[in-house]
Amino acid sequence: MPPSKPKPSEIAAEAKKNYIPYIRDSFSDRWPPTSYLCFSDSMHAKPPPRWESGERMNELMYHARFAFYERDPVDLAIEWAAGESPIPVIMPAHDKRPGGDWEAGVMSPEECLCRRSNLFATLTTPAVGNSAPCNYPIPSKAGIISQNVVVFRNGPEKYEPWQEYQTLPVISVAPVKRPKLKDNDKKYCFKDEKELMRDKLRTALRIAVYYGYVNLCIGTFGLGSGFGNPPEEVARMWRDLFLKDPEFVGHFNDVVFAFEPPEGPGGASSSSHSSSRSSSSKHSSKHSSSSSSSSSPKSSVTSNLEVFKHVFSPSVIHDDYKGSKHSKW
Image (cartoon, rainbow, N blue to C red; front, side, top):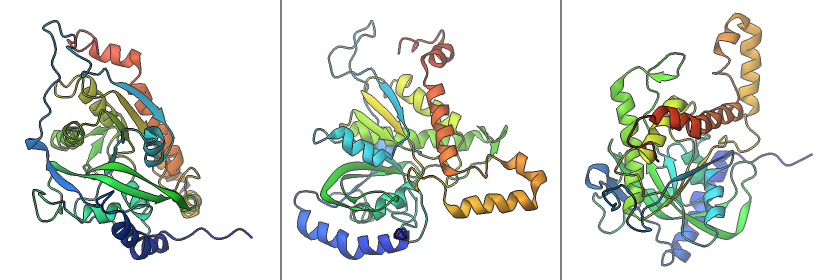
């Protein structure tokens, strides 16, 4: 009989008791376990210099390219960097608690990363010169940059320890949580919530530009049952910031959207399946109307990734930007 899968709470306890103190004591000089609270309004990115024609003046201006993978964003960012310039992951953060409910069984991206890294330690340790004595609660238009998050094990599929630790930067911003939606949950009801979400994305990009990162790895930021933002609207926000917003056009080279269920490639947990079957047997009349809400995390992730691919496809960009001065991007 195969060994049982470790409980998230047990993995968190082991990380907090053993790994995090060991990393702090052994590697602080090499990888300081600290972070900075960054306020968006004080970090406006300066557009790269251009000639009057709009052409770039030098190689410091990039034309953003996009790729899409059904993979864990942390693993992909580490593999992508491969010992060269580090590539940050933009992480959906809990606005009040460092790591959210990482010591419990919650399987959101931030919680999962905290169990396999020292992210919790960095979030709770403001660096010397930080703008505040504590990073929490994260202000609405602010984020946290942890430049040396040490990852020491696999994700929740097995949580196997690594022989060689890896590091990456993490940009933590709290997305809008469960906004009110309309049109079959495809659009925001309220403009204020939509614009606040756009500000969250803008905050993450300003932090990336300020710290000199030109390549990014973005996971399911603000998506899924934990946050509930509409995928197509969020995809268009990202796309327009990268391709139309003069503050960011030219600053980024390669951007990868990497979506994977928090539980890992295996997808939904057995409890969610059993809940869905129970709901189907007791409320068959409601099942068809709520199939999207009872779908597995894996099918939801795949669907969201396809939405992003569509929004970023050249034909859709061409149609949406037709006649715009940004159409050349």
